[in-house]
Length: 184
Image 1 (cartoon, one colour):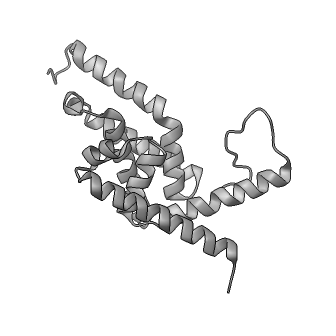
Image 2: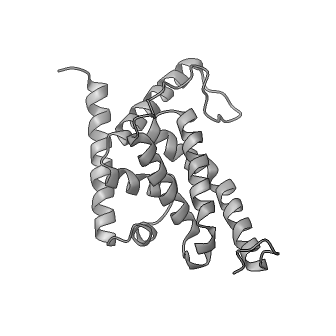
């Protein structure tokens, strides 16, 4: 593989285009996962850009990657975890006007409020998962990876993936139920 200023080999061009195409194709799921982890869309966009740069810096390794989607999600989730852990990244509140993509048929305003509140409860519960549970949950729910694909991507046994997913779902359900039930 040429590293000089001369022409880039065809295979590398194809791999680079594949990386760009994959990021474009997975962007909605990536943003959803990042928003769940970071709490707002602004930080999610920042993390997505940083994750793309990290992937781009390792584009020469693309030929060795067996599951591009899993690899991109893993890099992206690790980027979010790093961002969340840094002191400079203060948690920002979502903008009042921030909206999700909506279907053509608009639900009643009160239904939108209820749905928005429910999604925020779930997002908060996801943010409170352990990093291991969060990673498995988001790879399964947002990336749509199978348990086997997650196991390969994270280099852990399938049984461990299933256990982490089961614990994640239990924690999310318990936290949402406790919040909805209110104080005892």
